[in-house]
Amino acid sequence: MKKIVILLSVMVLAILAACSSDSSADKELETIILADAGWDSVRVHNGIAQTIIEEGFGYETEVTAGSTAATVQGHRDGDVHVYTEIWTDNIKEVYEEAIEEGDFEKVSVNFDDNNQGLYVPTYVIEGDEERGIEPVAPDLRTVEDLKDYPDVFEDPEDPGRGRIINAPSGWAVAETIDQKFEAYGLDETMNNFMPGSDSAAVADLVDAYEAGEPWVGYYWSPTLVTAKYDLTLLEEPEYDEEIWNETRATEFPPNDVVVTVHKDFPEQAPDVYEFLGNYETSSELTEEALVYMDENDADPEEAAKWWMQEHEDIWTSWVSEDIADKVKDALE
Image (cartoon, rainbow, N blue to C red; front, top):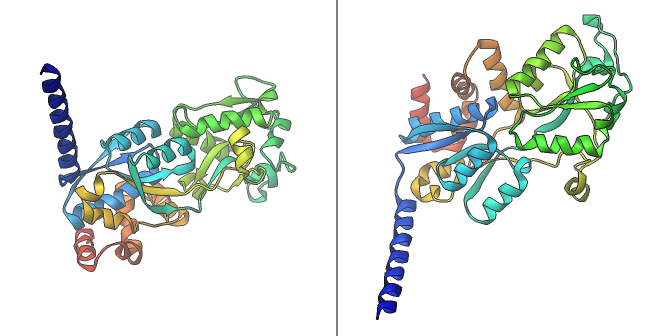
């Protein structure tokens, strides 16, 4: 008899747990939480989405900041409802696992015309007559070529060896750069320097650029850096999935940057879910907001509102006319 009672108790608990889970999924949200993984473009897209969500649909919004790994895990767990800028291939295994297991859902492609890899200022290769800069590596073309130029990109802390600036520690792409170092033999002559933050890497680049000195490191578009400075992306062999999976010794794979929502979100905020399914921009459009931030000493939220005023035809196509009118009134 005790066995039957225990079995029935377990069954009841399972049913209650399932009901509790269902009620959680069905419960409408009052506050929608977005992810901030630490760079300005995602902050601008958050600002655009938040303005529409708050002013058009009447929800409150909050932002959870953290590393890519932490915010993606929070997204899987439901602590983050919306991610406006997931770089799918940078976290390919985790992303595909989360999609396959149904933890979150891709609802749209924000942009897919981005680039990433190792950049040098163009004057390193071509010079800059206007600034009186002579080319110091006119034959530099590929990432693998870098190992022949330790003297050009000399590490100030290790004379005789060069320095390549990696992605910041904690970023998923930093491990990819580590693998490229080994695959191309860069570690023979170059040091793999990992900055503590994106701002530290940018400061290092800006100091070198303004002084007209050589610099090489990881960066990506769309960013203020690639919009503001004349940089050249060093070449790599054409993307090959087999080689990439084995050594990373190809160019970065096509990397859709997507908008995702937690699995429960379609039931919790169906109106916002529909809007996010229409969200689409481009690298060029994103960089416009980033340049505005820089030139006007604006924060991402201010840049987002400026962008919306400049591109009313774009964002109003994502929502119904009555929602668009509410948002336009709020922007005036």
